[in-house]
Length: 232
Image (cartoon, rainbow, N blue to C red; front, side, top):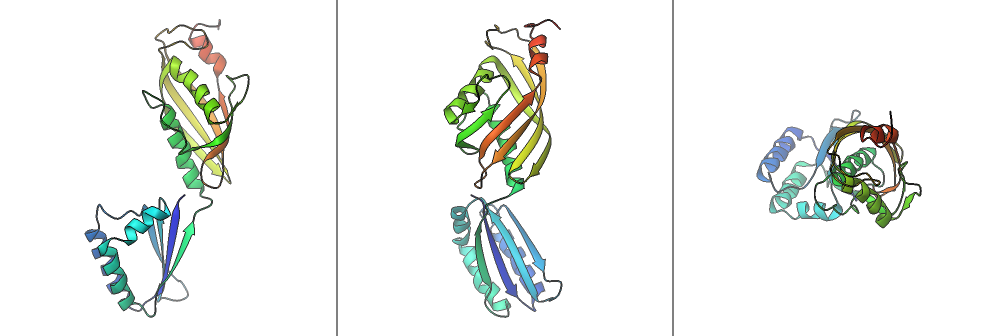
């Protein structure tokens, strides 16, 4: 689960603190674990500052805190502040950008050559998948993996994310997929034909950023026509 720390402080010596942060960033290059940080100044109080720092998880943040350079930074920072800074630790329970990244990661994982990687970093164990190529919905991780396995058995493929829209707990991804028919697919022997499939995937995420339900839409008829299974 993504973790965010908010550092709230007051200082009339901001320029000195800014140089301190630059020095710390240089000293910890390649070692610090934060993925993103922003520093803001209160519009109504020029001595009031807040920094928001994002980490992949609480444990990763703690590794960052235990760096010797971070400990020195804290003591030097306190000396520049008008009073003791306050720290607020937050577990992120909703992040639409995080869900968009997970949606992209899912398409990357299922298109990985070789053995299908574990999907539990992006898919919940009880995931419910609606796929027009499957008469019955796939419910549960094992069923989702079997459905994906059918496509991976028949094609070598890679996805390209063309567009994404996120709102609330859902992400809609418009994708294209370049594939080569290299194996048995729905009773069709491999043809070696290259195809391009386009479609959309809507995914519903739970609070920890994992998919609990999805809906696939793509041109299945056009694909079967391209493979010679039906007449155009």
